[in-house]
Image 1 (cartoon, rainbow, N blue to C red):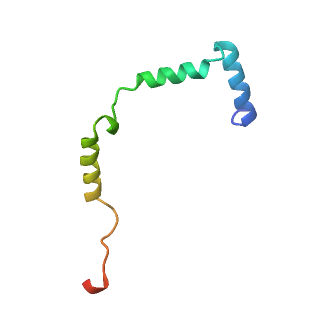
Image 2: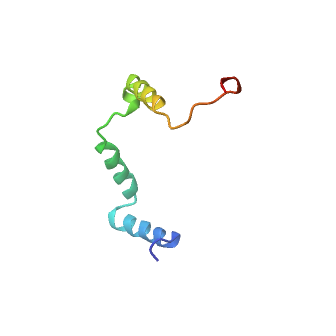
Image 3: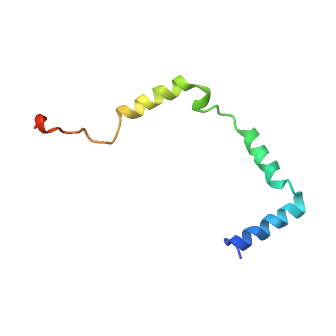
Length: 69
């Protein structure tokens, strides 16, 4: 029953039985602690610079107005 909702529920029950009822909380905490990057939240100025770079290389075409033609 792999890939079905029922199979997932059985797997979750097995994991909790083997590893404790807080199994998913524990593995989630491990993943959160492994993160080593600060991301843009840690450096808003860097986010602003990156956004400006992205804006300059936008894939959207220039708007052509009626008076420009």
